[in-house]
Length: 311
Image (cartoon, rainbow, N blue to C red):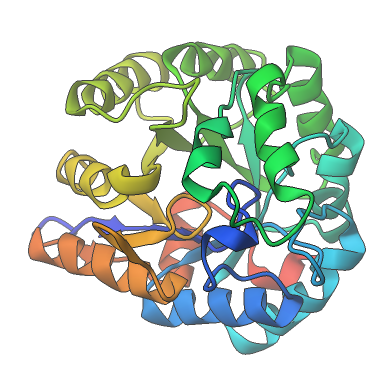
């Protein structure tokens, strides 16, 4: 009898895209981020993808000191896989972005495969006059003229800095060219299979969320990477659950969470990350799919184990 496929759910609990004025449910403090991650894990997320924020005003904060309190709490209270971002937030240097992953040596860290326009500014009119903190609107506006920088040298720096840590990567691909860049690093031996490829759909500046876009990403990854990878997807905003359903039916894993969408339905804010995990789990189980637990995700992705991290 064939072994049934297990689907890995990742939950990105806060991110650096949305600002506190957009939802009262967005986790900001260390305790809120810890509780959100643990709740998502209890709902079925095998992996939690983590950013940190300033607890006073919710501004993205990539200092290791901002991560330390909730990393320890999550490890004490959950067996989930912890994934630390190296994307950080707008205006951060590469060294700042990498500092938490370099210090804490997680099982998984995110790794972006290319420089790109990353447009957040269209959200401004929706919240004009409602921003609670002075930093929010300028932060979003900077994305009009700024860019998300991930050069070949930047990617090499992250890979080589983490090479001795046993950290594997959630390799984020926002467009077709990013898959070709990934193949380049695979050919050079700087990344090693099994790769965990996170295809991102619906960010302004990256590939769109149309079903044809999802299928094209999968076909291209299959052609370039063969059996060397596990595929996962995230759909931004209103595309979250629809893209997850499309990809899951094609053999993919899924990512949800308030980094990617603040919503649980049309015009309805999600009250927690766990609520989004529960909803996507219903979709997956409705398709007859089983959900991977943390240890099953570790086996699938060949992770080093939660006892080998530095937090």
